[in-house]
Every structure is written in C-alpha cells, then in structure tokens.
Length: 350
Ligand code: ATP
Image (cartoon, rainbow, N blue to C red; front, side):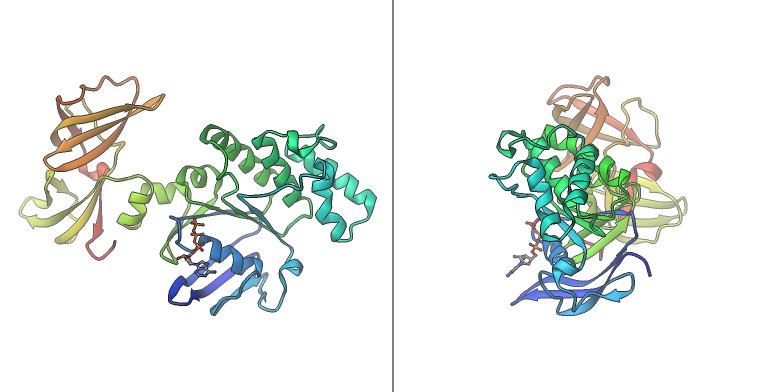
C-alpha cells in the first residue's frame, strides 16, 4: 500500500467530537486539499497525521505501516503553518539549513540543498538576505524552501497563505502549486478557501463537523456538489426547497421560484434544489423562465454578479462583464434549461 492511509479516525476533546470516522488515502505525488469551515476538524486531522496527538480510534499508516508508535520527528513528514515564523536572527540560508543541521546532514550536502531549494522557490540570489528585509511573499517562499529542504515524504500545509492579502494569495497559490507539482511533493493542503483548493489540488476532501462529506477532483466537486452544505460552501448559494411531482407529461419541480420540467429519472417527493449561478441567460431561449427584479449588480473585473429577488427569494447569477444587465430595481427575465441549471438533493441531505 503506497502513501498515506487514514482509516476510520475519530478524535474528541471532552464533549467536542472533532473528527468522526474519517477515512482517506493520499497517493505519492498527490496534492490533497482539506477544505472546510472553521472548526470542522482540519487542524486536528493534521496534528494526528503529524503525530502531535493520537486518535481515540482508527489508524493512520504510511506505506501500510502503522504510525501509532512512531514519534513526529521520525515520521519524515513536514509541516508548514500560516504563522510560519522564520528565525529573525538568522539569514535566509541559515533559516533553511537549521532543520538540516539538527537532522545531522553533512555541511556540504546542506550547502548544496539550500542552493537547490532556493532555486526551486525562485529565490536563487537570496541566500544571504536578512529575513527581516523580505516581502510577505518572499518570506512565504523561504518558509516553503525550509519545509521542502529535508525532502519530507509528506508535506502538510495549514493555511500557509492565510496571513497574506488577497491579490498576493492569488498569485502565490499558482506558484505554490507549480512548485509542489514540479518537485512531485506529496502534500496535504488545508484551507477554508475554495478557490485555493480548486487552483492547487488534484483531489479535494470537503469536511464539515468532523466528517468528510465529499471527496473528488475540483471539477467533480464544483459540478456535482454532494449536499446543499457543499454547494453553499462553494458559494453556489441558490439553494431552495421544492417538491418533485410526476404527472402524465413527466416530472416537474414545484418551487417558490416557479415550476420546472425535469428529466423523468427523478423520484417524487420533497427536495432541496440548487440553481447554478452560471446557467442563466438573458436571450429569452431555454425551456424555463424566471421573472424577478434586480437587487444588485456587482462588478468583479471580467465578470459581474447579479442578485435578483424572486418573491422573497434572493438568487445570484454570474455573467461576463460584457453582458449588459438591467439596473437595480428593474424587472428581469432569465431563461434556463433545467437539465443543466438545476441539481436536486434529497431532503435528508443537509
Ligand atoms: P480552523 O479553520 O478555525 O483552524 P479547523 O477546521 O482546523 O478550524 P480544529 O482546530 O481541528 O478545526 O478544531 C475542531 C474542533 O475541535 C473545534 O470545535 C475545536 O474547538 C475543537 N478543538 C480542537 N483542539 C482542541 C483542544 N486542544 N481542546 C479542546 N477542543 C479542541
């Protein structure tokens, strides 16, 4: 068995169940994102894998070998936190060399490895720089170089970009993904930001309340969220209740937004429904129409977000900026094809 296996891991702190029967694998070279809201158990899971704490139940193995009795420093795993704290009294190369020295690497190998990792993170001329003079992005790269230097079998990154401003974060997430892929670094990347997870991960594990609620590629998760929680977490917020009825003409979704014909493969009964924000059109084509009034149009650069009130329900839709939208307070008619635009969840899923 290759890579990391987490099998039915459970962990409580007093009355708080932080993790409940969590199972997944990480294959060599794979980048996994753990994505979920604050308090869902992401950091607890990393601490158990790192060996900083022990599960109450379940098992964690590396290449089939149980890790339970292996202390953190013998696991060969690296950790990089949001607050990655470079040593302020050491320059860049000594920051990177620190862990290698304590690990007993010969001096000339250390020198070679420091040069190599600085090259990898794109800071080849920074070896002698005072870390106090680095920009936020440069500090983050040095911290990454320090984490990569000992060749960790698994690198765990806990919100490593969390303290940086949004534009820097967007730029660095691409660089970081490139570096991890280039070095074929097996990695677990913890974040509550779905865009970071989408940009970086081969596979995303969406967590909620101590459980993995969906696992899949970024495309699978985005196009087919498993529950209304996952949909809302991905900012697919047009979730509403409805009822599927089957009549002579086929299945129909009856909802506060109107009635939508559906494919016949659905079962009758109460459902939650997701209306995808990128599937509405203004051209009058499509099998269904939604009538409402514009509550807001928010410009986002090359796209814009339209908020529409349909009765008491607020819906958001995304359009390219080139599309001319009616102004606030004006009536609007949106067309859609239910087959592409509507996804149903059973009433039991939350
Ligand atoms: P964040 O994104 O805010 O860091 P998280 O998803 O990493 O959150 P955890 O830090 O793993 O979440 O916490 C999961 C739950 O376990 C929370 O309810 C938290 O309060 C609780 N918890 C974590 N560590 C401890 C502890 N040492 N003692 C008591 N409760 C804890």
